[in-house]
Image (cartoon, rainbow, N blue to C red; front, side):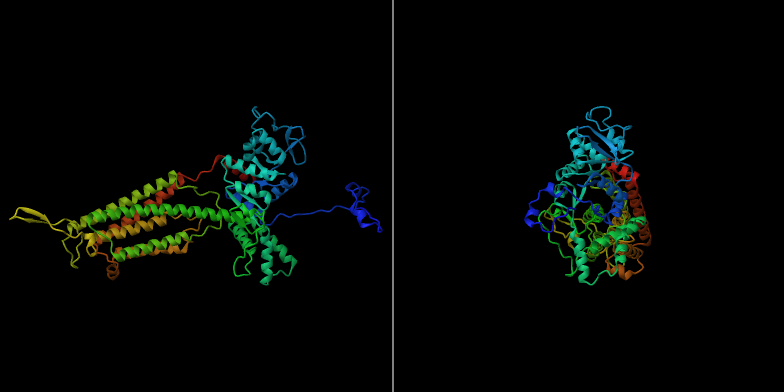
Length: 559
């Protein structure tokens, strides 16, 4: 501090130069400022690491500060090496204490020598950190792509350098999610595959909303315990950590107006450049975004597969019915449509799992697994449909022309021809196609309806992708009870224990032996499709890029 005479004029004090102000100072002590790491950061980084995601820090803070925070949240766990220089474009790796690592290859100027693999060799034993000047040096030597494969901490980076890092990550085949909260992150947020803007005002808005609702804390100890609540969850399962992170994000919302009140976005906020905006100051929203994204991706892929299989099976059944002059009744079509609509509604409402699995879902349907699964399952369904319809036709051929109820077991369409023998003219008389005549149940119609409904239900049950990215079939109560109820109804209709019910559904009375064969074929079809799907899922697992696998290997070693 510097003492100023009491009689000194204010204008004289204001006109003092910086040199005059900073000379003749008296030492009073140090002022220490602490910016604590948010309590949700370390648990969120741990969940992401255990779910095959590598976390990298890009900050404008000092290198030592960045390395300390990275170690505190779990981004780095091994000894860290920092790229340093003496100002003469001579760079070397050194520990955070400033000791050069002489026994390992240094970062050298000529990258075309035998020691140009130094980054990969260093990354096997150390976590690497680079400052902005070191990043520029690597860029000049065309080593930026190698840098983003191995470096875990970037410090003293300018906005342009952040953007450059993200673009280099994309160039080497990495899928990048960028999380930022300031104007200097706008370029990197736009360059990333997924940008998440953080609004620090979210926490304050949550406190204001809590005060309005009367939810105020009366004890400082209780508040501190809540801050450390997520930190204690690090020893628990991923599901508990994710549930707590979700609860804290929801607590940051302002519900005073009966819903989430949007915050005012100021010019220059990162939310203007990012497709996602989180009302939280930490990286916890990234966990929820990955969880929701995986569930949405899995749901879309299973929808395509189920729709494709159902369309193929229905097309075959309808073509056979058309050729044989058979059709579904109105009641049958209504029941089939309601069953399909109910199952797809339950599929679309499948919630994501509370855990993030280490394995990632497939990113596209254009894979060998998808086409092999659809082809093999359709072949199985096709054989079941063909076999049951052929068996039904055999029973029809051996049955009398008309049953006791008066309904024809099977009607084949043949054109009627009248011959005028006297005149020598042959005249074809118009006839009505069975598809245009009033519906009458028969054996072929009944078998095709039962088997087609079963194959559609089996397609949903077999191809539903639950764990590890969504709720399991048992946990998805609407879908589980829909499948279970459909199977129970098909069993009752096939066994014909309630004739009145079969009559209401417009089904023909089947021989007991044929009903037993249908049940056996349905069970075998379900088992075969289940084995095919599980086998192909193991034969063609989801793949990860080699660059991402290298980063994940380092993450696994850290954890």
